[in-house]
Length: 475
Ligand SMILES: Cc1cc2nc3c(=O)[nH]c(=O)nc-3n(C[C@H](O)[C@H](O)[C@H](O)COP(=O)(O)OP(=O)(O)OC[C@H]3O[C@@H](n4cnc5c(N)ncnc54)[C@H](O)[C@@H]3O)c2cc1C
Image (cartoon, rainbow, N blue to C red):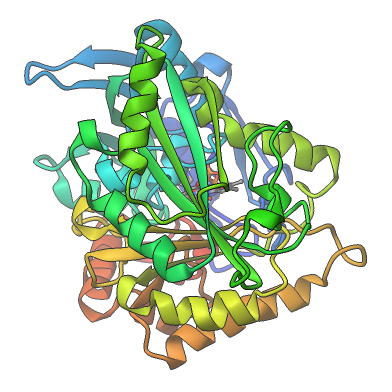
């Protein structure tokens, strides 16, 4: 039924033995799987912390996770949705929706071997979010098992505090066991485009222009961007930009004014197999008209919709073969408001990160109005804000930089943003003290977060690893 409940209890949670809590939850859920101690789930992708969970609940069969909760429904109001298990991987949801129904969710993450419940507990952001909002804006109902072991269906109108609390709630209020995900017809093909910029100002002007164009016939279906180093480093330099091994980034096309850091807009436009290729070209060229990229540094490929959405899977295979997938990943994800992003570029991107990070440095704008502020996600105040994702992929020390130095660099960046009074938030936040969490949420949101915790998980048994709430022996 659910993949695992790592978020439920941790071994170092010594104040009380939570075996009874686990057993009652196990019974309440009528799980057919097995339960037992294991260190299988003691490490995560970050590779920075290791903590053995007390129990690991394994579904009795793949069906418990995959098909038990999968049905596509056409509602009376015309919307189409899929009911999927919280433990299902987005890539499986994608394949099933496309192959069996010709439909697909509207909003994605870049990497799809993540669970539905896991990304909904954060936000779920990729290049479609400018139009549809994050994944948390694209679900209409959840089934949640609270910290009291109670099972609720919840939505905007039913048990709404739990619904909005669980979305972006970092697993603090309940375990999402089912989600109703909005679907749209899946396109067949995607034109995937990368455009190179030398000036941050031009890059942000065009990126903001593209994300604020909301007419679907006159806008791209995906808008992202990244910074890269003006070097021949394959991981984060010019060779990281072309989309196909046959394409070559010729640096002689760069203007002489180009600095040591360059920028790339990454765009995609959906189309159907039956569309006339010349019409597709015309449509894309119309959308590119007036943009200020370096004209001879435009890269594009056509690929199937599935191949486009599964593009990071190929990078994963490559990284696994090189041994850098399993190395520690001290990633840093931030939301930085439009008003502070130029300063961020001048100091953080151009100075602190001038040597690159061994992987993508995503920088692209999002629109606050596409996010529902009743969810638990903390956002900057301004309508346009940027997601900055430092996706470090360096080989383990001593081949690569020491892990401690990378963590120190992340801290330096956060300190700079704080010192300058930037309007910013950590995305996928991780703090060590409750005071830091209070600061993260701000007074009003923190009060609401605490109220929801008191209501849905009074003993604070869920996701203790986040260090937001200490265990309570009696509610
Ligand atoms: C390689 C990689 C690429 C990523 N790319 C993106 C991206 O493009 N966009 C983006 O927005 N995010 C991205 N993320 C971050 C991702 O959204 C979070 O790490 C998310 O928690 C991953 O889900 P998971 O299934 O791996 O969760 P897990 O690692 O299994 O769980 C992490 C935490 O999420 C909570 N949680 C998990 N499942 C549930 C549930 N069913 N109910 C309640 N709480 C739950 C718990 O607090 C748990 O401790 C990426 C992460 C990785 C590792």
